[in-house]
Image (cartoon, rainbow, N blue to C red):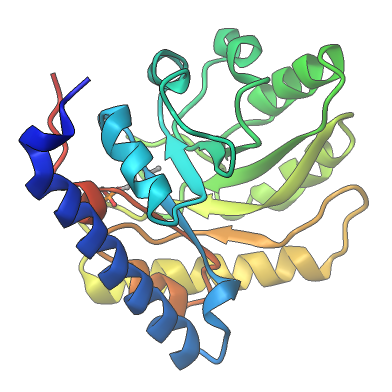
Length: 242
Ligand SMILES: *Cc1c(COP(=O)(O)O)cnc(C)c1O
């Protein structure tokens, strides 16, 4: 644990960053004809020490996202999660599903029918319903997993048949290399896909979350229809990977 007194500046930065981001989220929501509270603000906490995560929670954060099962499990006991939900947002391997199933309220990074089947199996075993988002490989990148834009509807019908998993919406990470106008196009495509799928009113699915937008582009994402933004480095500073 890092002593608070030694890192006072970092605590103050987190508070100030949260204020600025909340304000930006509100403004982007209002400018796209929605209410500020219609957009969920997730703090992405990968590589961040629990002492800082708890500081963000004390300052109003009620949803955090972690990418890795092992990292989440190793930090969880040190987190003050009484009023804070945890989502998994990173690629999940089949053999890790049973480790995570009791520790998150949503898995945003479901990138294949295979992993959805394993989540269903473990959810049944643990007698719970797991909410999931389908991750779309919106830029068709070879380096990324995820459903293809044209194939996700068919996969969604298949997943909707599985017990104890509930598709709650879609998630994406646009290509890192995309410029602003390309990113805006990817977000718009996502938004259209989300609306099309929602309007199909598929049995057993409840499309209400469109998770897109990170530190560099969350305002554009909201203006394109996102209702859940995942912000890390703009809150906690640049990540330091060991
Ligand atoms: C790391 C990460 C984020 C946050 O990225 P920042 O640019 O630091 O805001 C959001 N979503 C996913 C899936 C991530 O892995």
